[in-house]
Length: 169
Image (cartoon, rainbow, N blue to C red; front, side):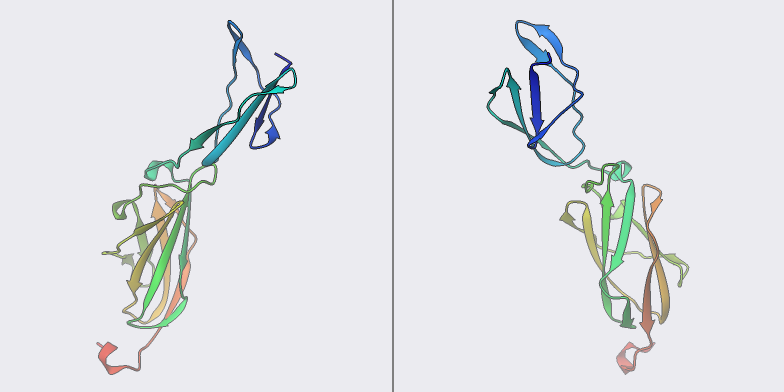
């Protein structure tokens, strides 16, 4: 088994334990943690095998989320203006998590002391989701996202009073 070498994405894999299954068949366990294309080439007695690829897909669902990052497209605006919230959700290996819906996401606004409602989250791929929101009350809004009981850092949005009479309530 010391004559068997395996390259993973052009890097030699060391410390693999090869088990002989009989009739010249050997197996080894190699966990794959990064999503995307993984290419392998085995080599025995300096004779390389044909490369083969394994595609690792994203984990799905809120229970896979281990980190939550929230950003706003602007941190200062006029009351009645829109900002776009961007949520980036990753798993324990820093891959984007897919299959998240609005019911899985809570955005709390400490300024108004309640959760934002009616947000339409659009998946952008690789664990990124966006939702537009209109800030209708003046003040410094501290927003925090929660998914799978994991919270983001706070994002501050300063909503300045509007001078436009149509925005004044």
